[in-house]
Amino acid sequence: MKRVVLLAIACAAALTAGAEGASPRKRGASTPERAPPNQLAQEQDEFRSCDVAVRDFVQGRREATALPVKEVKVDGLRMTLNFVHPYGESGDTPPNLGFTRAESIEERRKALNEAKQRIRTLEEAAKTGNVWYVIALTKDEPDGPDGRRSPASMQPDAARGTASAVVMASIENRCITIAQYATIAPDTLSEDLRRLLGEKGREASPADPPAVPPPS
Image (cartoon, rainbow, N blue to C red; front, side, top):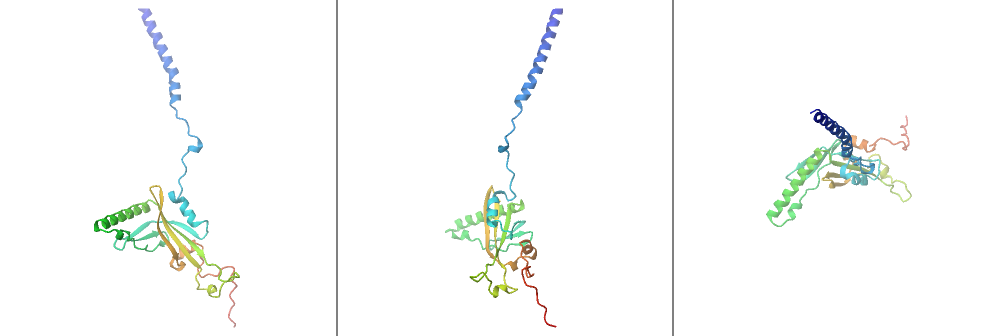
């Protein structure tokens, strides 16, 4: 009887030692390998899928900025859009009348519903910060062939150039151009936005000659 008890104790001790020896090996085998640095996920760009398109439109110009669109105002009757950004609004887009090209009423209605669905998707993208109003100033070039400005361009009220803008949206990992504004008069922009773009308004620049006081 004593031999049976001693044998049982010896077997139990052997099993315990075997389990303790196998446990570290099992834990070590289940440890996942670290991914090499080149496989780490890239940091998401602030402009999402429009990272290249936004910078290509700006082309490094200092008189440019990309503003987040906070709201999309929709005129469902005229099928126009107006994009609200922190410094104002973009103004209405041309009417989207593409649905009128269809022949039958059923086809036109289908195209109209698809257009409205795209607008709803755009509204949701704006709410999540995936739509941008990108605007840049274009300075006037000297008028004369010798590089000198014409008398008209030297008037204080003369336009200092024009602006152009584009609205881009990152939707389903694709950059979509929603609207383009080819020519924008700077005086239609808010004063804060002009200041942000480096437009000095009617203030004299450092290169301008000092004003001569009238004779006393």
